[in-house]
Amino acid sequence: MEEILIALRTIQKELDEQKAMIKKSGEKVTEQVTQNINKILDEKFNSWEEKFENLKAEVQNQGKRLYFLEKQARLRNIVFFGVEETEISYSNLERNIASFIERHLSIKLNSTDIQEAKRIGKKGEKPRPIIVTFVTLGLKIDIYKNRGKLNDTPYYLKEDYPQNILEKRKELQKQVQEEREKGNTAIIKYDKVVVITKNNNTKNTNKRMLSASPETPRFHSRPQDEKKIQASKKNKTQAPIQRSSSLSEGALKPGMLNFLTTKNTNNTLIKQNNQNKNI
Image (cartoon, rainbow, N blue to C red; front, top):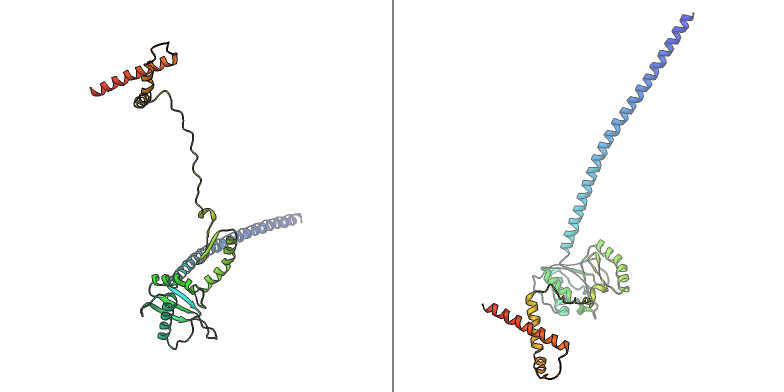
């Protein structure tokens, strides 16, 4: 009986060990499968993320191209406001615009100067704006520069901007007003604010302070400079020397005696230098 119990206990122990091994093996398999799945998901996610970044960059590039193309397409455009809507055909509209520009802006146009002209918006009681595309940018600039002649009239001109740029320019008006309240000059250039501060407008009138000139050293001077100084001293002291020759009576002062001695020595040196140059 005891042998049977011992055998049963042994079998139970082996079963427990096998059960633990199976459980441990299952955990390892589960962990390995999880790691493999995570690895596959990470690879796919990285691939999708790379594709997304590439698509994002491509979309941004396309947006920049469209922005540039639209800006270029509208570069030669001017929007005319207030022009009476009396035309009955496209050719009649072109003639009306040419006549309007000649009458109010003093610029005569040929029949080929206008590339396109069209009304925008729904027809109503007020005349609709006219977008005019000119053949050359120079002609458009000349016409737009003369827009000040319309100040006392019901007509006015504006640049042709896309709707998103118009909204952005409207938002930038607040910033322009703040800069002008500070005393700065602020204008809107397309979709950006250009600020010219007071410091940039005023010229700097402060001059550099002149430093005190150092005293001429008594030593380490060039022989040529010494000769120039001695020659100038000679010219300046000629009159006093002639006047000192009249002092036949009385003893000379030590200062005057030293001055005459130095002068004679200088004259001797100058003569020797001149002789050396002649040789």
